[in-house]
Image 1 (spheres, rainbow, N blue to C red):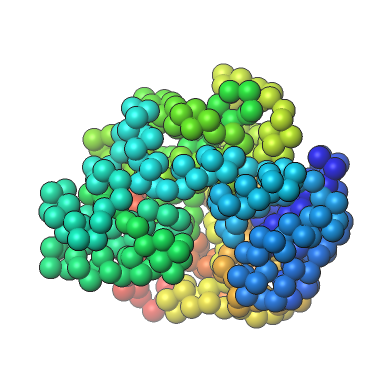
Image 2 (image 1 turned 135 degrees about the vertical axis):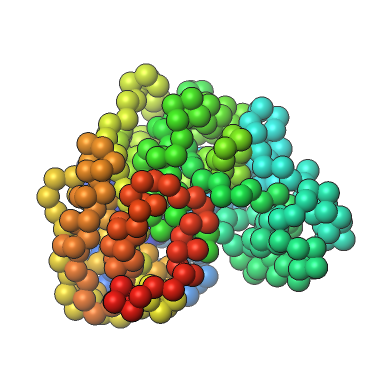
Length: 452
C-alpha cells in the first residue's frame, strides 16, 4: 500500500495512524469542521476536511471519503469502527474505485451484517444459536412467534448492531408496544425495520472470539474476550481471557468461531459474539471490523491486530500457525467516556483543562485527548481507553486500581470514578458476574459517600 486514508476519528483513528507509521505507510486523516483540532488530524501526514459537524454530512458521507482518497492518492481506506466500518455498500464502492478496503469483503459484511441471516449461517455450520425465530418475522406474526418461544423474549433488529433496535419483553401484554419501539428504533438507526426474536437467557455471559483470516483460506483465532459488563448493551469494561469459561468450553467456542468465519469465506479481522450459560454457548452476531476492545487481545497474544488488518488486506498470508498463539497473562480494558456516571451518564463535552495519564509496567493508553482539547458534543462519548496487563488476573486488577488513581482528566466528567468503584466490588474481583450485572449495580442505591 502506498498511502492509507483513515475514515474515522478519535482514538481509533490515532491507533490506525500509529500502526501505519510503524509499517512505513503514509496516512491521510479526514475530519469534520468540529474536529479541526483533533489529535488524529495533528498526527497524520495529510488531512482533508470532508464536511460540517453532523456525521451524516462528514464521516458517513461515502462520496466525500472516496473523493478525499482520490485527491490525496490514497490507495487504501481503513474504516476503524463505527460510522461506515460495517457498511457493505461502502466496502463495495471502495472496490469499484480501485481502493483497498481494509476489512472483509462487501459480501461477507452483507451476509454477517444481517443478524437473522447470520443465525442461519451458524445453524448450517453446526454452531449453536439462541432459540429463536427462523429469520425475520413479519410484524403480524411476531406475537404468536413470541408465545411459541416462551417469555422472556428479545425483539432484535435484523440489521445493524451496537445494541440498537433491541427490546426485552417479559410479559405478552407488553409485546405490542415493545415491537413497535424496536421497529421504530431500527428504522431510524439502520433504515431497516426488520426484526427477529430470540428467547432471553437468564444471566448469561457475553463472550466474543477474535479471528484473523487471510485471502488464502486460513482462519485462526486469538482466543476470547469477556464483555459482560454492559450498560444499555454498550460495553463498559472488558477482560481477556474470560474468567467464566473452562478450557473445554474455550476450545469449543474458538473452534465454532473459526468454523463460522470459514463458512462465509471471511477475510481480515473479525469478531464472533456468543452468550454462554451453564447449558452451553450460543452464537448471537458477528462484528466485521476491528473492535474497541481489541487491545486486550493484543496484550495477551502479542499480535498487533491493526497491523495484521493492513497486512492481510495487502494479500499477505497469515505468518503464524494456530499453535503459535499462546495467551500470556491477563488484560483488562476500561473505557473512558466523557460522561458523568453519577448523573445517569449525562454527556460531558467541553475543554480538557488538565490531563495526567498513568504509565509504568503493563499500562497502555489509547486516547484522543490532550490538555486544551475541546471534546465536541456531536459524536460518541468514548475519548480513551486504559488497558492494563498482569501476569495473572489478580495482578491485572491491582494494576488497574493503581493506574486509575493516576489517571486525571480535568474540565470534563469521565467514567474513571465508576471504574474505580467497580474494581472494589466482590463480584468483579472474583469474576462472578454476568451480562445483566452492571445494570443491576447501577440501578441499586449507593451511600452518598461513595457517589463522588
